[in-house]
Amino acid sequence: MRKEKAKKSAAHSMRLRYGVMSTLLLVAVLAAVIGANILVTRLEKTHAWQTDLSFNRQTSYGEITEAVLKDLDRDVHAYMFIDDEPLCDLLDRYAAATPHFTWEKANLTVSPGLVARFTSELQEESVTSDSIVFYCEVTDRWRTVTADHLLTTSYDEEGNVQITGLNYENAITNAIRYVTADEPQRILVLQGHGEKTQDDVVNLTELWDRAGYDVWGYTFSTAETELKPSDLLVILAPTKDLSSTEYAKLLDFTEQGGCLLMSFDPETPLEKMPNFTALLTLYNMHPLEGVVYAAAADTETYYQNSRNWLFPAMEYAEPTIPMIQNGATRTLLVNSRAFEIPGEVDYVYTEAVLSMDDDARLVPLSRTEAPNPIPTESDPAGPFALALLTKRITGDGNAAISRAFVIGSTGTLINDPEQTLDLWAGIDTEELILRVTDTLFGGVSLDAGIVARAAVRPSLSVESHSVGTLAVFMLPALVAAAAVVVLGIRRRK
Image (tube, rainbow, N blue to C red):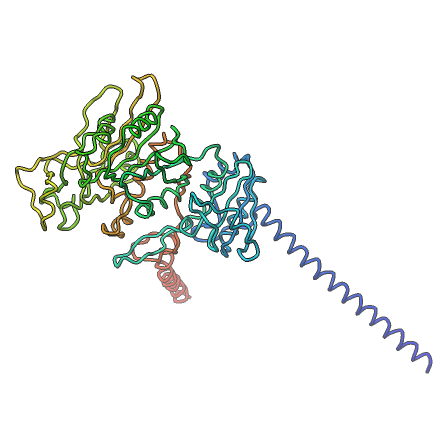
């Protein structure tokens, strides 16, 4: 009896011991698996081992970013306020590529100090729940990237906004280049002469902002912002002339190599503005009075029945050559002033950027106030330049190079709502503005120029020639062919 009890006790003890060992072994295996999973996950993020299987590779970057990260020698830290997993994965890849880039998730309610730290009254930047802030301690400069920077949009036929692309890589790379640059490229928008206000130019400012430029308002009377030869001064449709003192300051700015981007509408009273007129003459730019109208027969040069809504010819010029090569040549100018086709002047090289042909007419401004004015044979005929680009060697050819661009329609630059948003966004005006800006800065730009990835997977269509589409159509045929072969073999048997 005792022996049986002893045997049972020994067996029970053995089962208990084996059970405990099995449990401990199971717990150890689970702990090892979980630990390995955590370790591998961290290694994946640290070294960017994860494979990007998205159709547009939205969590990967290309050669331009690779070169930027390779040359990065200043620490950049990003504060991520957006809840976007693919965007986080992309930031992980940036961090894996260089020890000089780090990032963290942040929350406005938990970290309210960041809002005050990265807010600039002068630049009107602020931290929001849909933004990322990039900061470089060496330069003490930051960049706020919002959803407007991360997405590209267009307008459908009804005027509704549609998301067309993901601009993640370009926005992040531009921000890194901006905060680490020795001196950012500044664009100063002149105020104080009845020019377009900052509210009027918000679309243009956002375009430059997305491209990595530092945009400021500027007046000659304030000392907050000093005009430097490396700046680009923007003058948009002034209604009052420069004073003698202001003109002298502007001449000194251009003599040192400062550059100008200007617009003068037909309504701009240049005949009462001798200093602005003298400035244009200095760059071999000679404005004409009136509004340009296309010839009735040239239906491809104007929009529908509006002969003053012009699709001008894009000429071969420094900023337009790559656009012409890529077929991006369509721009829209509404109620445009004309300029003389430039002749040759010593130390001044001027070329037409946009033009209208011989059949275009210049209608006096007084007649355009009537509904549907019709050009007459007595109206001056073309050709006309609608936009000009000048490279002027200052100081009798022994000093700096000052560049200037002028266009006869301010609405083309600022995306005037009266000139239909869908037309402005659907053509190549944005690219023209950015390429002209890049040229005025001497071809040195902080915009990486990375093409946005498609936001929506393209649907299959009859016109598609992809391998997947061919497989869909070929599969039934291959099955039928295999069936015929099998039936033939069976019949012979």
